Image 1 (spheres, rainbow, N blue to C red):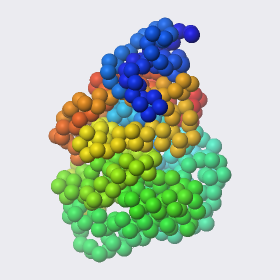
Image 2: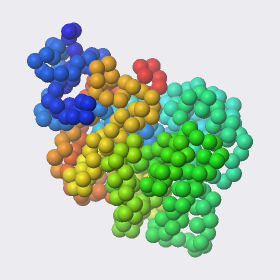
Image 3: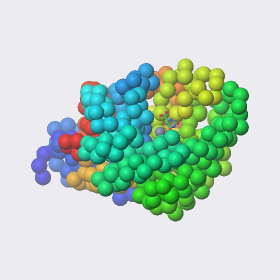
Length: 435
Ligand code: DOR
Ligand code: ZN
């Protein structure tokens, strides 16, 4: 066997089990897995002594912002936070300023991102103005189209059907946010006053809006789309019946409406956090294997914005790159959440969604993207130490059991023990060159 660049050792997740093993990496690709006695010679050895090594976490739904929203997050702060949370590849959403809905804007975004990202990053585009623009966007590296409630749930114009068909024909993804905007608008009218605080959030955006959107989307565009951040088991059933793939966000798996009532604006997220019972049913669903993909929906805003008084002014979204996986580990210890199902839903599930077999598991020939964690370390969440610019969290002050210790992207140590180890721009744009 030839020499490898790096040999990583630890307790490696291989075929559903953790075993003491070595991973040899050559040019960013795994070329050896096995016992140390059989390992090839190496230039460098990184010993993760007893720590757990899993395939690099993949997040197919995140908001890195940048451009006109740099004050909330930029591509460096966002991807540093991703790396610190164990994520090796993240997909960024197009609801930016300006929106990423033309080829030119996509190129501008990529230009800005590529000098700043520290983990690999892919992009969705938003609803373009014209079908002809969709033809240009599908020829870029972009993963696909993201549609928001405002885009599809008032009245569907023929041009949107055409855009969806162009995206499908070119084998790009269609991801939609399932909340029926007409129901939300109607419910908002029930409170004509200037609402203060967030108590009415789940009345204004109830589960019915989610159910309705899942059926509306099917009626308008047929099957073959991905419904993101489902918040109930009933929604999962509807998505499956309609032939959609789907994910659940870690927010809805780890938090409830009680957090919104206790902490206010920082827990306002669309779709809203649901009841403890609904959350529990989602956990059981994950445990049974019917949540194939987890996402973070990392959505940073400034604390000043989150502390605004009026309901309509408080922007929705929870920053959670740095707590998502630890919160899952903590639930594994404390509530019997099935860790194998959760690991799969942050690794194999999203890799299969992308149709990218080089990311599905730690096997020879695959990319050496690895997430290293200590399942037992207890640590106090201190948002002021986060890499994200959004230095607040529903978990602030809580002790979580389970911590991300290191992140390896294409064989290179990107994050270890609280520190970013690579230069800005180390990350690659997903869908370009090497990928
Ligand atoms: O809570 C949310 N935040 N939901 C969205 O649909 C958008 C996101 C954001 O960009 O902040
Ligand atoms: Zn989102």
